Amino acid sequence: MHAEIRHDWALDAIEALFELPFNDLLFRAHCAHRAHFDPNAVQVSTLLSVKTGACPEDCAYCSQSARNDTSLERERLMPVEEVIEAARSARENGATRFCMGAAWRNPTDRNLEKVIEMIEGVKSLGMEACVTLGMLSRAQAERLAEHGLDYYNHNIDTSPEFYGEVISTRTFEDRLETLEHVRDAGINVCSGGILGMGESRRDRASFLRQLANLPRHPESVPINMLVQVPGTPLYGADRLEPLEFVRTVAVARILMPASHVRLSAGRHEMNDETQALCFFAGANSIFYGDRLLTTDNNEENADQRLFDKLGIHPLIPEGCGCGSRETAPAAASAKA
Ligand code: SAM
Ligand code: DTB
Ligand code: SF4
Image 1 (cartoon, helix red, strand yellow):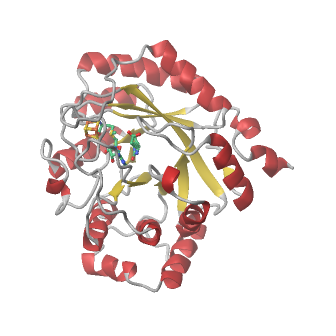
Image 2 (tube, helix red, strand yellow):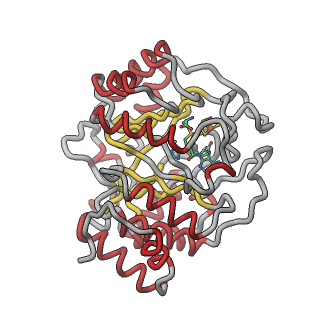
């Protein structure tokens, strides 16, 4: 029911979804969710910033832009062994995917080789590997694919119409080009954006339309609520109404019924009720661990309690060698 995969969405039709009565929208999204997924399984990833700060880009939301005065200590690319150690600990805590982020406009070929060692280390632990390194050339995407990278995260961030209000140092088209390189190389695409940056509802509809009308939907769609960082131009922006965030998750689920929709950054400031509504609306992935890249995430214990309360269990990917069946959050209560 309502779970057709389409790539020809008109903006007005998406806006009409946003305007449905809340219960009608959530019912429709939840039916689409059930048609494609176990509604009680949530994919669990852990993030690590492997190269922090001093980024030349001017993203108005970001703590890591050299142009934003955010008191963040810049750090060099982490040693491979430390990254693998962090992945091992994430695996012990129940994550099945390890996502490594670097504050680059794009990686140099030399840096890419270091990241490949990290990817190989993560894969050798039986975990899925994801990286987000900025723009990629076709050749770089192919090189990552040769080394078994599972997912590449590259967000379009917002609508093409609002984009210029947020970033000036790279274009919306640059982002689409990187996504095409990743897709053509055969790597799973992870692409979404940020809400609560002062965009309109029409912008939120247009942002989702861009993703839904790609030749193939991203396998993973992170929906971030802006984490307001002091010293960034977006610090102090009007907060988005939580129910509008839930609506956006629901529309993402209807437009991309077979994709994992990630309830991404911003959970730290959401209560359990808002998160529960997001799961009902079709969110089925989270970042787990008490840090995102440079800001705090929910504490692991709080997430375990929430999973327990909602009867949610972590999704274990097919053929996963990570041993997470025994250790993942809420796995203990699921067995009880
Ligand atoms: N530098 C790379 C890039 O921009 O492609 C990779 C890392 S970047 C931090 C990854 C994504 O995190 C951004 O595209 C943005 O969507 C999200 N992000 C960054 N700062 C955020 C914030 N303060 N609140 C919410 N999401 C944020
Ligand atoms: C995504 O969409 N969100 C993550 C991940 N992809 C790389 C990053 C969130 C960053 C939140 C702010 C911070 O911790 O710096
Ligand atoms: Fe740099 Fe990525 Fe932050 Fe933009 S989002 S400033 S590209 S680290």
